[in-house]
Image 1 (cartoon, rainbow, N blue to C red):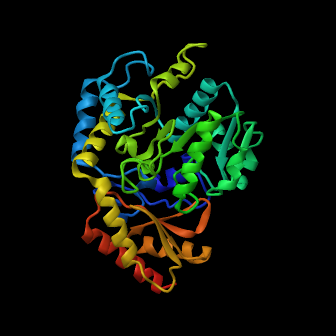
Image 2: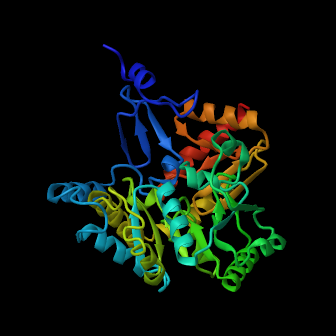
Image 3: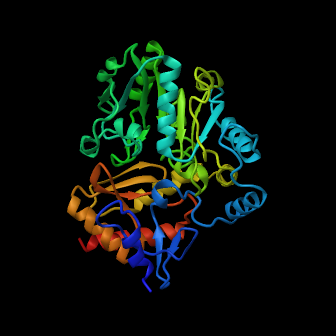
Length: 394
């Protein structure tokens, strides 16, 4: 009989030539366990997904309860399903008043695609602006607005009428005009290696969008749900978007995403033509139940507030001659080693010592540090000790 490892390589489509290929038997809290009993501290949360760690009992119970009532019943938007309604109400109550209409999807890329269509439909324009080193997903539309050419070129032709600007360069914002349907931006660029937007830049961007009637889209797929020290990163900048994108941690570990706007704007997808945007599994009731449980836990335990202090604790502990810089917000951090080979080697060494870290798509000389928001000081101490020990070995 073939092992799971052999079957993995035989039957699963691989995303790279060198997957981690660690078999996971189960996961609890911030740890992953193999069939052989080896454990790993999850210091990346499945790329900012597992904000409440693994197998949180309240989320597990919410999933079981909803699965026992009903799962898929009808394509999204036709039937009234309690988990969708409750989650939409809960998330809207945490957002500015004009962000009061939620369209549920199943992933971040789908949220991006929906937002692109919504902005085009509402404005009647077709130009889309995004920023270099931005990551918005892998579907064709999301890939089109990605800000890194080497990842896009093998798949051309992509969408037309696109414009790439440089992040944090206010002088380039005059390229946003009356022809621009929308601007996509991450308030903190994740795959660039956790690069924060300057507050002055975002304020200027908001003003330009107001003046030109352009829709401002905040991609908070990676930064949302408490990771950066507030429930949504945009709250730290004193401005709000016209469309907000959520996914990753939004589903509490289940596949769930959303694009959120006003009722007025969202209504444009419902007519001329009707069903202007549809999804079969968007807002799956089990996923919404998990997402609601997750959101209630984060809010109740103020994990978004605690993320600031935990992130600062990690940054203060990570002092080493091989570290050029540790930057980020809350528990979305990048440890910059200034050297790609050192970064790759550190990730390998950390894995050998039981710590799961990662790199960034557009920043190969930085190590991703994004543990679950529930991580304790004892667990942070253990992870940092491993990192420092591995840094000594470089």
